[in-house]
Length: 246
Ligand SMILES: NC(=O)c1ccc[n+]([C@@H]2O[C@H](COP(=O)([O-])OP(=O)(O)OC[C@H]3O[C@@H](n4cnc5c(N)ncnc54)[C@H](OP(=O)(O)O)[C@@H]3O)[C@@H](O)[C@H]2O)c1
Image 1 (cartoon, rainbow, N blue to C red):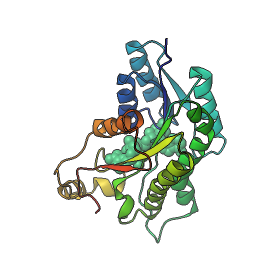
Image 2: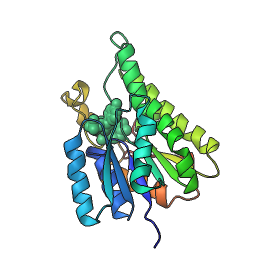
Image 3: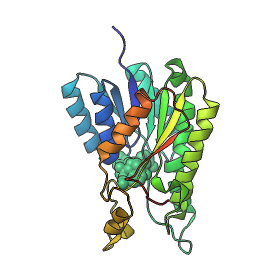
Image 4: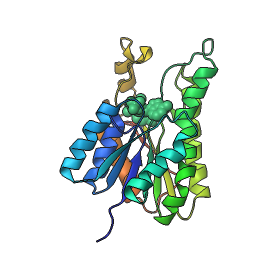
């Protein structure tokens, strides 16, 4: 019997990451859910998916700000499933960093989760992905070409991630395809700016489709890039209702 494909999703225990895990699982792919603090959510999702298909899902903990976490996470996937076909770099930190208040701690955190971790996780995974003609999807942000006000470091990190996607597509070719999905307004964050009156309505009004997206919209784009878009690499697909930040 042919082995099932195996995917690792960082920050996969809830919100958009959980939707990606569920969509991959629906596509008959087994999933390693990575989490940092949200163990309860990760265990809940693992239990739910394992009820659908026995032994199809496991969880792995790791703080992606720590350099030694990358090799460790990948080796846990290999110990459990024996292979790695797909890597989804979804985990992120996200908050404003105004020029007069930002500091080195913000820089280290935002760059580590959004940019450093995707690069070094890819590095740790390359050997295994190559064996399977695997594929990577990075989750960037629709603002990648047009920075969001007061989010300097996050903007830099996500633009860097789009650039990393194109670099890796070239450097890992022809064995591994690397693409990105750039979400727009999907799930709100509780940070100050996004809970200000009018902020959400204003953002949605800028989209062509005049509505908020769903986590499933992102998840389906990720699964498409991993499993179906076999002649695409180095692409960043915007899933943002059109018009955002352009
Ligand atoms: N939400 C949106 O509408 C939207 C819009 C544009 C782009 N995006 C992008 O889409 C992706 C998913 O968005 P989201 O809103 O669902 O993400 P999120 O809830 O902000 O974060 C996802 C997970 O990232 C993990 N994480 C954060 N820092 C970490 C660290 N140092 N080490 C390990 N894990 C860490 C957290 O895991 P634990 O909870 O386990 O600690 C968190 O649950 C992100 O890349 C985001 O930038 C989202």
